[in-house]
Structure formats: C-alpha cells, structure tokens
Image (cartoon, rainbow, N blue to C red; front, side, top):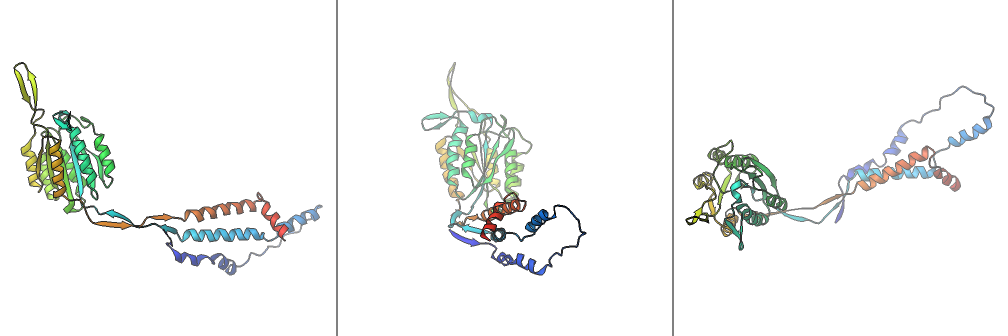
Length: 337
C-alpha cells in the first residue's frame, strides 16, 4: 500500500492564520466612563488576570488543530495493490417460467424425480456461476412478469433469488409476451451487441397484455438475441382402468418459441431432462462466450477522517478552556512561567 495526497496544493493554506493576523488591524479599546466602586483593588487583580495573553499551550493546540485541518483537506489516502476484474462481455437476462405447470415432476435430477422448476434451478444455477464477467438479471413470470434481479455482476445474489422462486408466485398462467417485453425494457439501454435473453418455459402464452410475437419484433428492433428453451418431458405414464396411458402435463407451444428465437437471431432448444438442460447451457456458453478481457483498479482508503476528528477534539478542548471549564491549561502555563 502507498500513502498519497490527493490535493497537495492545499498545503499552501498553512500560513493563512499568520497572514490574517499580520494584515488585519488590531481592535483598539474604546474609552469608557469611570466608575467608582469600593472593592476596586480586588476587582483590579481579576481584570488584569483576565487581560493576560492566552497561555502558550493553547496557542500550540490551536496551531496543531489548524495543521490537522489542512492535513485533512489535502485528502491523504492509502492506495492498495491492483485488483483485477473481468470486463463484462454480455448483458444477459434470464426469464424463468414459474407458472403452475412448472410443478410437474416429469424431470429427473440424479435418480430422483423432480419438478421442472427444480431441474431448471439446479442447472441454471451452475450456468449463472460460470458466467464470470457478465452482468446477469432475472425475470420471473407466470400470469404476470416481474423483475426479480436487475442486471448485476453479483452472480451469487441472482442464483440465490432463483433458488428462492416459488411456483405460482406470479400466478398460475403464462405470460410469455410480458416477460419478453419486460426484458426488452431492461436491456434496451445497454450495449447493442451484447444483449441476450434466455427464456425458459413449459407452456404456451395464456395471459398477459403483450402478444409474444409483437414483443419479439420489438426485441429484434433493439438488437436483442433471444434463446428459447422448452422445458418438460414428453409426458408420463399413468395407470388407468384400462391400463397405463401417457399424459401430457402441459402443451408446449414450440412453434411460437421457435419463431421468437428465429426472428431475433437466437435458437430454440428442447429440454426433456436435466441432461438436455446441461447440454443446452454448455452450448449457450459457446454461442455467447463470457468475457476474457480484464481491467484492474486500486482500492482507495480515505484517511482524512482521522486528522479531521483530532482537529475537532482539540477545538472542543480549546472552547472548554476558554469558557473556564478546563482551568488546568492556565495553571500549567502559570507554573511554567
């Protein structure tokens, strides 16, 4: 660490009190009418005592306080060692469906059957962790779409809030168009070549005020690439009166998801299990690589508070001494004299 002075030119203000004392005229005592009092002799001793010049120690303390104030004004700093940070390569927004159909347990995580949302959380969490250098945001949508996390470098927070998402929190239906529209609103002011939306859903657009394809046209005009992922197995076997039959938990609108990706220069992926999701996120890492460039900065620790606090403390002591609340200063000065 290095000690540096941000504003060294303020040292020139050190002789300012001497210049003020030298250039300004001294106040002259105005004549006053005489007053005869019987205890003049006793009063004369007190008046003469009060007319003495301030003790030398008080002058030294005042000079020290001024020196500390000037030192604080110059902004002394400790400059730390350089710290390397990656430069953001992408502004990447995740839009995750948390509608009621995401509760279907037709996905597997290891050997255990899990819901679609649980599988998305597990794999997307790993993907978020790997996106070092990117700013990542999170949108959750059901009947309504809302921004859970704005674009941030804090991947841990994005991952934590994704894990805390609850099915049905935004309603049981699916508003794909609203989710795309919200993502466009949050991404439109970022660098045009680095704006990406990854949309995960297991159904069709059944709610919301914006049509998905119209929202897609707006995203295309803004240069935002959209990668769509259709989540969910092909169905599950249910034992009925006439034997097992396959039941579909939701109706995935693949045609719309493919059109959304195609119109924005992205791609559509189909994820039937967690293995598919992992392959998709691995492919996305290749299609949208994280940044490799780096920047460095040196942390700055401001030190002006220390001399400023010391100057304030000395000023308080001088004020109390002038009011006679700390007579020790005058007594020490008298003993030294």
